[in-house]
Length: 188
Length: 182
Figure (tube, rainbow over the protein chains, first blue to last red):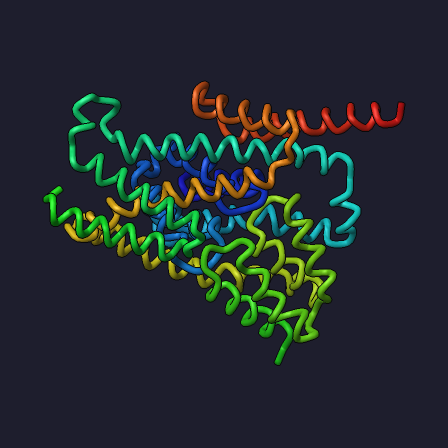
C-alpha cells in the first residue's frame, strides 16, 4: 500500500539524516529513483523550490514527494514519517542532553556519520551533474549542443554567486531568469 | 493565551518565515523564546542546537520538540512540532500542484532548465561548507572517499553507507580511547 510505503520510507530517511538539510538529499534521491516515484530532473526542480520556500528542507522534500506520489494523503504520510524519528528521539534525550552529546558511542558514531554525509552528498552532486549536463548519456555530440554550454555557463555563474554568499533564493532567481532568457534566445 | 495555542502559533510563525531551514531558524527561535523569557533559557537553546547535531532529523523539528516539551510536556512538543511543520507543508503542497500543472509551459520549462544548473552550484556550496567543518584526520578523509565510492560507483544503498560509517566511527573511537589509556 502506497501510503504505508511512503510513511516507512520517509521514517527511514528521517532516522538516518543527521545535520539536516542537504544531508538527506542522497537518501531521498536514491529512494525516489528506486521506487520510481520521481525522475531526477523533477527532483532537482524541487530542491530549488525547497530552497526558495520557508521551512525545513526535509519537510519540504517529504511533502513534495508524498504529494507527487499519492496526493494530499501521501504528503501527510511522508511528512509524518520524516518528522517522527527526531520527535521521538528528542523526547527521549531531552532529560539528559549534555550526557547524550558527550557519550563516547554517540561521539564515535557521529565522527563516522559526518564525513559519510559529505561523501554521499558528493555522490548525489555527481549524479545530479550527469542529469543536468548529460541527460541522454555521455555522447560526443553533446559538446556541440547549445543546451550543454548554457547549462555550463549558468552553473559557473551560480557557483561564483553562491560562493560570494549570495542568498540561495537569489541564486535560484538568477539561474531561472538566465534559463528563460537563454531558452527564448536559442529556442531550446 | 493558552500555552498550547501560544506554542503552536509561535512555531508556525517561525516555520513560515525562515527560508532554507536549518541553522537559519535558530536566531528566530531564540528571539521568540529565550529573549522573551519564554519556555527555555539561552543556554538550553545553545545546548539543544549542539545536541541536534547528533540526533537525526531537521534541526528546526528538534528545537521545536524540545521547547514544546519543556514548556508543556508531550502535547506541547506535539503542537510546537506541528506548528513548525505546517506552513511549509501547505506551501509545498500548493507549489507541487502548480508544478504538475504548469511545468510543460515554455517559460516555466526554460526557468527550470536554468534552475537545475543553479541548484548544482548550491549543492556544491553546501558540500564546501561541510568539508570545511570536517576534522582534518585520515579517518575522516577515508570515510568521505569510501562513502562516495560506495554510493556513486558500487551503488550501495546510502542508508547502509551511513550505518557502516557510524559503526566504523564507534570502533575507531573505542580504539582511540584504549590507546589513550595505555
